[in-house]
Length: 332
Image 1 (tube, rainbow, N blue to C red):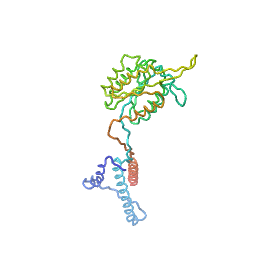
Image 2 (tube, rainbow, N blue to C red; image 1 turned 30 degrees about the vertical axis):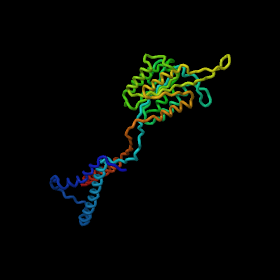
Image 3 (cartoon, helix red, strand yellow; image 1 turned 135 degrees about the horizontal axis):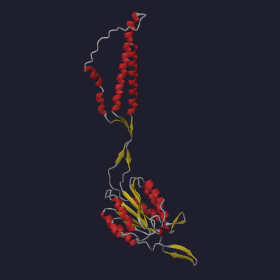
Image 4 (cartoon, rainbow, N blue to C red; image 1 turned 45 degrees about the vertical axis):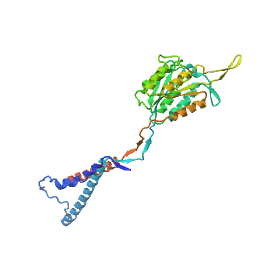
């Protein structure tokens, strides 16, 4: 639809008439020279010249009025409003904390019937999760011996997913500082709304580094209103080939499920156990179903300015009128 931002500008349309009606013209002395354009035939001069002058004056008046109307219409700032577009606004702040310790290279998962390490599966599934979070701010923390903020909370989900895909084992050290990761997340969350924050922590072990205990960090998160969704990854059974034949082992003996479960309970979150790729994908789909923070629906209407389509012909008419006036003055 057509919209004028400053419609009150149309009140200025009668201004030229008001000036002509109420403002006295400046007195000019009569010219001393009588100009006769037609020399050959006085009768033709006195009859046809006034008619030409009348037609010329009427045309100039019409052009001037048209230029004035176009100028006022352009000053009213016309614009074309497009159809309303709903903006995604679930409004959650999600921080992903991913374990890069040495044990994440254990190949106890399968993808396309091929053995694959835990980190590769975690990166692939989590990257898909990040790209689905339209309207949410998503950040990324990588932790091992220490915790590092790889991506701050941002609406640029594609960049966050790309940074996750570039993560490699040992980038943050080969130990596991779960408490440090939670503490860093709490620090970065403090600038956001308290009722829309969640930390998704993925690990395959127990806290073996850092000065902050996981439960103490979880208590800090609970005080800030941050929910923790902990994901423990790793199969319960794995077959290894040795010099003495095959041997079945439990590759997840270091996973501290008790602490992870308690952390989730303290923050009103949830603990998930992922023993295979399909289960990890299911966990992220469950997290997708978290209740979004209720916010007022926002819409956007694209605006296309139109004033220059009116301003350009108004200026063109003004130039023509000025050129015509100057030519007449030179012809006198």
